[in-house]
Every structure is written in C-alpha cells, then in structure tokens.
Amino acid sequence: MTEVESRSERLERCLDATGQSPGSAVAHYNLGLAYQRLGRFQEAEQAYERSVELDPTLAEAWVNLGGVRLHGWDFAGCMEASLRAVELRDDLVLAHHNLGQACLYMNDPEGLVRCARRALELDPDHPPSHYYAAVGLLALGELGAAERHLGRAIELGHRPTAEFLRALERAQRDQAADRIDMVEIGGGEAPGKVKED
Image (cartoon, rainbow, N blue to C red; front, side, top):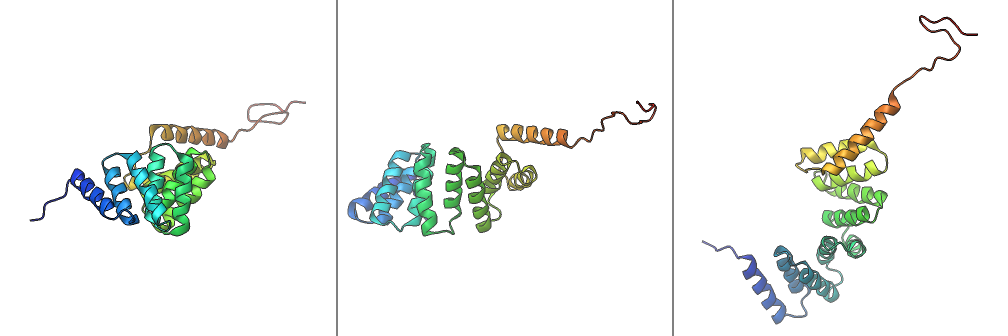
C-alpha cells in the first residue's frame, strides 16, 4: 500500500529538488505548487517567478503566477502573467479565467466577457466562466445573455454572490418597468369619456 505524501512532506521534497537542481524551472514550478497548496502565496509567487525566469516558455508557471498575484490583489501583475500564459498556450482555460478576473477587477467588462467566452470555447462546462460571463454581460446591459449564463453556472454547481443576485434583480425590475405599455389619453375618445375639444 502506497502512503500519501503530506503537504509538508511534499514541500520538503520540492525544496530538496530545487537545492539539487537550482537551474530547473520545473523544480521551482513544483515548489510553487507546494507553497500554494499550503496557502503560502508570497513564497509561491517567488517560486513561480524563478521558474519563468529560468524558462520563459513554461506556460503553466505563468498561469499559476497570475493566480497567486490575483490572490494577492495584484491585478496588473495577474494580467501581465496571464497574458503571457495565453500567448504561449491559448488552450489553457485557467489562463483565460485568470485574465478575465484581472479584467473584472480593473473594471473592464468587455475584457471579462471576451475571456469568459474563450474559456467556454475550451470548456463549455466551466462553471466559473459561465458565472463571470454573466457578471460581465450584466455590466454591459445584456440581461438575457447574463441570465442564461447564470442559469448554466448554477446548473453546474457555481453559487452566485448575493450582491450579483441583487444587481440582477434590479436590472430585471428596471427592464420590466420599461416594458409596461401605457397609453396616454390626450384629446381623443376613450371608453367612458367624451372627446375633448
């Protein structure tokens, strides 16, 4: 029976690997993963930075670098790393997702929708991409499309924030109010009313 490696054992193994092979981009990448799994995001960021310094073509390291920067609220840094990841590997859903998150926090709903749509081209059942497509589309005033993406996100198990649901309800009420047909009676005849001169 094989024993499962604990997170701390994995970290020790990865630290040993970078000590034995300090020029290995993959060793530093794996160290970043170990730190990230322990919630040590600053050390993870440093390991990923070292990884892409050693091998600038390691797209997965760029993706994870974008993710830890996003976690640290460094949206410009997330965007930079995620754009590099997308340039290297346009087929990585998480790269597009992270890039979309940077767009969200940098108040770029068009960019968010573009990234979410690309992620959904790659994985039509990616719950967060459906949800963030809904967020961006609502910000752009595309209520019907936002509702469709939100519905799919919920079907796939994504839980929307209460804040987003309130914004959606406001948009639905506003749209319903705009659809109410009203007839103004001016100088014409109406049932039970004599025509005014």
